[in-house]
Image (cartoon, rainbow, N blue to C red):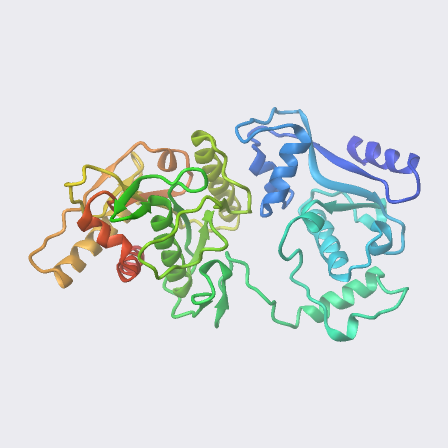
Length: 422
């Protein structure tokens, strides 16, 4: 038993026999950041865990963790009463108990716990179970297990419920999972939530889709008549459409910047807002450097996690809209990281696709979009191979037509997909 376990166990044994809990604290390892530490304990998928971790340890978005320093995790440690999770925590919710049990078992399986909570009598309850919005468990109640009586809730009963639940389809599919048949993804909005699986051309490939700017930063701004055009809204809509396209062909996309109430929109003029979050639900900081590192840190943590599973083909795609002189018309152009041959190859594939489509649909017009190296944060600081895409000049009236027309935004996403499939 480690010193940490002895300290926590002693504190619990000396405390009252009620529902008193201690906060779990761990030492930061070399290379740990906020996201990598929380990901190790399976906490980073919930934004409220990230915010609570920073609150507990008085950290900011730009804070660095010190090696060997102890940080409190958003996990409470209860003294297990030997009867059930529900009686231990004073909450009779069955689904909640199942979720807590699964969390403790996952930590045991990954080696982050030395023994089962029924052996060392220490029950971990992560913060998101009670404080984050949304589902905390894939397991849902059935009508015949709602009224189980006073003595229900033993661990054997929870195992039985878990086995029965395994035979049922989950109500929602997590965004990073691709399964056969119709899938439902609320992020795309009600009209586009159902995503068919057309084929598996992108199976085994992972894409981190990053719509530029968001939150307190609308990015480049243009005007068309009385309408304000915000870069982050139009880049996000194209990014969503590309993400949905990837899912249709069996790939695994992560929408790093998210707006849970927008979805894919078929209007010309998209209303600007500032409620975007990042993967996991955390809000976007006001400081630009912090915003950039927030999203690159998330991508790097996901990259390492997927690489450990043996998935090598991973690509970061950043989608932006440029701003230049009103009279300057530009075609879609692309950047890749310095020295990244795979990124260069992907960018050139996309460029060739756009060139071919221009020849097909706009003969004689010609395509002048370029591909070049660029030292940009999202290319330099992310571990996967990357492509940075500028869709148009938001100030040019002709280029504006490329992004305000919803059919054109879908074409942009479709042609980007073809460039990735080739």
